[in-house]
Image 1 (cartoon, one colour):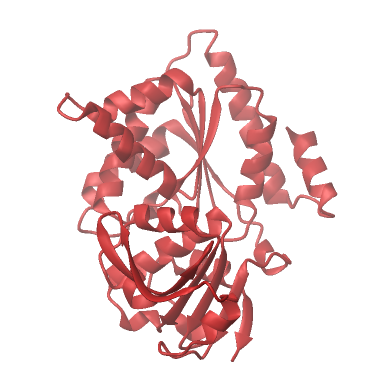
Image 2 (tube, rainbow, N blue to C red; image 1 turned 90 degrees about the horizontal axis):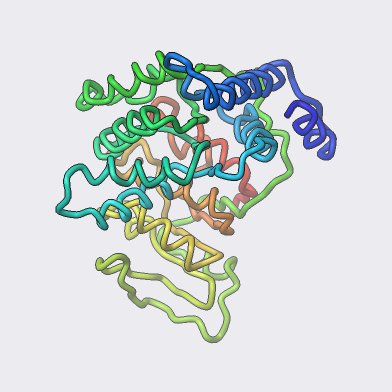
Length: 338
């Protein structure tokens, strides 16, 4: 595993920092012990690894190397939002039967020995309940779980309204998982040349600059509507593979992560006009925007954002607990002052 990690880095012209090397070694040590525990009796073996640290510290890259090198066929890597949607859909098959979640977790355990979970975070009561119970069942059934997160276990569920309901899951992570902090001090995303779209500012909501930047052609439909999971969605414009819509339609209405997943699956270029300074918005609006950015980034779409202000002003420090991750991702858009 260490050799594979070193090769992946050298191919990109990098070498591991001490924190990354420690993380890959700890993952390799845990996996060896986990595989050995399947062939001999062991009293409550370490159930998995919880790898956490600040944005851009290389957690996903470490996970890439670990997952690729793990000598298992029945392994799976999942992303937070898509996996939660999958769980909810699979639970519908057991509707009316006792404990649908436990049944779905049992199905997963029959097919997966190693589950790698990227971007683990909890800011919604439904997610908290679902993830907490899922972790418990998977651990009980002997599935190895590796998570990456921006937060230490104690920081996973900061909302006091439902933190009590997630405390058992936090205790499970602290007691049954190897908790490894990855923080080499550098944000490697700041050094990367990767660009996944454009951040254009200042752009008023009524401006048509994003339509021009998107490159809409003669066959584009303007000022039209579609249905998004049985709810109406007004569009500024659309054309094959391209969609242009307003921030208000996307985030000020009760959209779900499932809606954002569908949009990113159907369109390869997305433009969003009228993104305001988010500190003036409600926490629900902020959370939808953060979820949308997470999903768009992971899905590989090309994103164009028309914003009222610069990235420094978009969301002031402390206005949302998760904005550091979102800011890091938005910094990988070309910053164009219009």
